[in-house]
Amino acid sequence: MKKRTEIQKHRKQHVSQRANQLSPSGIRKFFDLLSSIDGSISLGVGEPDYTTPWHIREAAIESLEKGMTMYTPNSGMPELRKELARYLKNEFGVDYDPASELLITVGGSEALDLTMRAILDHGDEVILTDPSYVAYSSCVILAEGKPVRIPTYESNNFEISAKDIEKRLTSKTRAILIGYPSNPTGAVMSRSKLAEIAVLAEKYDLTVISDEIYSKLVYGVDFTCFASLPGMKQHTVLLGGFSKAFAMTGWRIGYAAAPKEIIAAMTKIHQYTMMCVPTMSQMAAIEALRGGQESITEMVEDYNHRRLVILKGMRDIGLSCFEPKGAFYVFPSIKCTGMTSEEFAEKLLSEEKVAVVPGSAFGKCGEGYIRCCYATSLVEIEEALKRLGRFVSKYRK
Image (tube, rainbow, N blue to C red; front, top):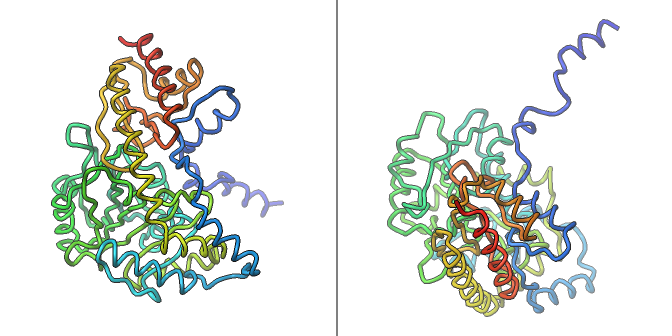
C-alpha cells in the first residue's frame, strides 16, 4: 500500500509534458469541421486537387501484381535512392551518395521528425521563421529542443535575414530551419539572401535544415537549393518529397539528403519506428522521378493561373495580399475586419461555408492573416471569392 501511494504521488500526470506543450493542428481543425457542412468550399488543406498521374499509379499497380509486398531496406530501395541521387544532381547540381547520404521516409513530415530527433539534445535551440509550417516548432519540442522563432513580415516579403538570425544565436543554437517556398506565405528566398545565411552556418558550424517540399512550384522566379550553395552540402539537411509536385500526398513518401553521419543517425530511429516506406509507394516514386516532369510542368502552369486569379480576387474585395512566388497559398491580411484570424475563419465557415486556416496557426506573426490554398478548381476559387467578398463587406470596419 505504501509503495502504491509513493508511486501515485510521483505520477503527476498520465500524459508527457512534451505532448501537453503541443497545440492541435490549426489546419486539421477546419478540415475536420468541413466534412459536416454541406455545400462548403475548402481553401484549407494544402493538397493538390490533381490525381496522381496514371503512369505513376500504373507502376504501383504493376508492383502489386508482381507480388512486391515485402519489406525493403530501411533506407529505401537501392533503385529509388539511385534515381533520387540522379534527380538531385540534375535539378540542383548536388552530388549525394545513394548508399549513405539519402534516406527514404514516410512523407516529408517523418523526415522532419527524424532530423530533429537525430541532431538535438535536451535544450538545444533551433531557429525558425514566424510564421512557418505548423509542424516545425512541434517537432523541435518533441525532440526536447527549444524553438526560437524570428518574426518575418509582409513588409520584408516574409524573408528571414542573416542579421536577425545572428542576433539570436547562443551557445545552445544547434540548427536553423528554413522552408522556402514558404507554407503559409508563398515567399521564396533569393539566392543572395540564402548565401548570407550560408556564411553564418560556416562561421558558427551550424546545421541548416532546408524544407524544399515546394521546390518545383515557383512562378517567375528561380529556386535555389540551399545545399547547392558553396560549401553548404556538409552543413545541410535537405528535406523533400513527392506529395506536392507529383500530386502524391496519400502515398506518404518523402526523403532526406544529408551528410552520412546524420543520415546514419536518422536511419537508426527510422528502423525502430517506421521500418521502411511501403514498397508500392517506392515503386511509384521511381516512376515519378523517371517520367513525371511533363505532369509537373502542366500543374505549375495551371497553379500559376489560379494564383493570379485568387490574388486579384483578394485585392478586388479589399484585402491586402502579399504576392506569393511559390507553393500554392495566398496569405491575405484580414485586419480591416477587426477580427482575430481564428474569429474570422470560424465565422466565415459558419456563415459562408468557406474553410480557410487562421494565420495564427503558423505563429504570432500570422495573426491578422488567413491562409488560402488555391490547389482547387477555378470554379470553386471563384465561388469562394464571391462568398468571401460578401463576408468582408459585412464586417469591414
